[in-house]
Length: 87
Figure 1 (cartoon, rainbow, N blue to C red):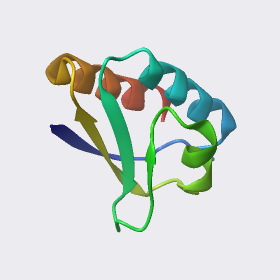
Figure 2: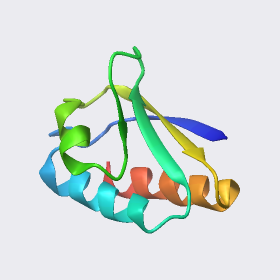
Figure 3: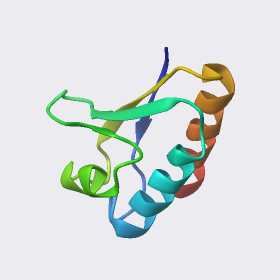
């Protein structure tokens, strides 16, 4: 299991467009990717668009991204790069 934390910098937070891109990127990996709010209040599979949007992640909030199974090292790096470029 690999994890990293990321603070959302998108001015609108995690809204429909980046959430859709995230779900698409996560589905392309051979690992299970889970996103959890820093306070632990909500968690969702990164492949589930509506679940991600339902988390209500705002600008400045920190999330923990967990990558399990498959090629964890490469997939975690890919997710980290995705977050830096899109969120």
